[in-house]
Amino acid sequence: MAGRQYGLVVYGASGYTGRESVAHLGRRASQIGLSWAIAGRSRQKLEEVAAASPGPPPGIIVAEGAERKTLSALAQSGEVVISWSGPMPHSATSYWRSA
Image (cartoon, rainbow, N blue to C red; front, side, top):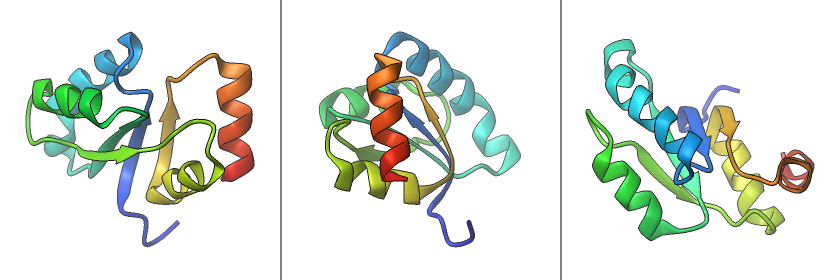
């Protein structure tokens, strides 16, 4: 997994659970030297989440859950990708097929 741009990517960052994760990571990421990004379908929502995050702002990745090309790029961008998008049967299948 060497050469990935981020150590961690949070997909579905603009939903409730995603925002909670981003708030926690925003406080801790710089303390532990973690390069991280948030991802989702809407750039505007992601920018709002990034602006509200404590600490240095995370990277932003726009990825449509139904588009294999963008999900593939998302999968290749982080060593670890946490997905809070749903509904899980649909989104998880699309993501793992593109990884």
